[in-house]
Length: 268
Image (tube, rainbow, N blue to C red; front, top):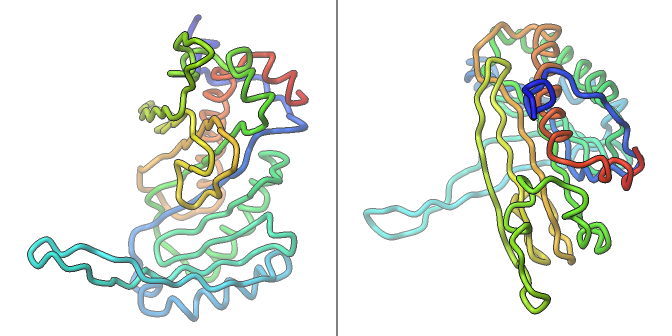
């Protein structure tokens, strides 16, 4: 396989899948702690939520308690979780998360296209920039979580994905031996950004990410997170350009991971 058609090729033909196995797609921008946001977060979040309320009118409050083990005393003590505001679309498929150091747009189970998500995130970034005047961004990222859970597709994974991301599923085993769990995590660095790829098999009612709802069937996951941690000015157009390069990086890894039979099976 040449560099031009490998996982880090600069261009892979894009194919729309009618039954894409995407259960979660996120794009995010993070920034260093900002004085005004740290001291006036609630007021700023209220303004942003109001501006976005036509598309994301629901606003569940996310605030909770985490727990930390004190190594000296052996006691568990509660810690306040930093405030995060969430605004959700009426159909519960789109969410915006806003915190003192990041903003995230998330789609769960209804992703249609990169263009649609980019346009939505462009508006979110524009509103955040206008109302906060943040001077710098610290990290941008785009993440795709694919999951095969249909029993027929799961049984045919060897015909659908390449052995590299099949992992232990490619190990020959008799019919009385069942693979229960196998998971791989790899981090790649390049001049285009970083790529964190996770893939493997999960047993029923288990998940590799606590924020992702588990399913009752065995499943195979391909979780691709492309990100750049270089500091830059908080300019929405520039940030979207960086995200475009990152999503191309992530998509290239996805296309390299799956076979043409995967594309055909899922409606390409």
